[in-house]
Length: 77
Image (cartoon, rainbow, N blue to C red; front, side, top):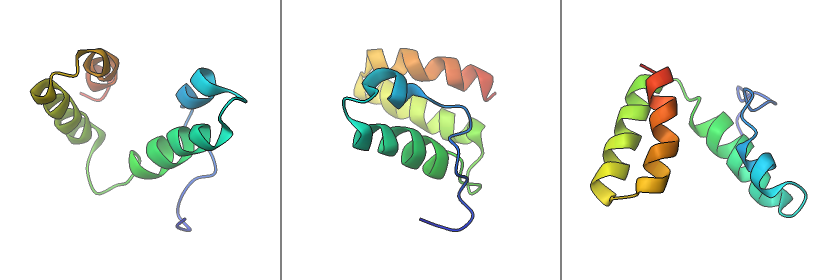
């Protein structure tokens, strides 16, 4: 892990809500690594990151995942 990574997940608890105590390792990678370390990197704005994510999910036909990400895309501009 890098030194500038927050010890929180910025309020994201999707992994904990979905997997709870059943799969704590998966919760860590979903909430901490993916949404705290990767999603919050400053190299790409949240708007652009959402745009790329929505475009990729659309191209792949991932409707269930697309519905989830569209809400965040709206929030991110």
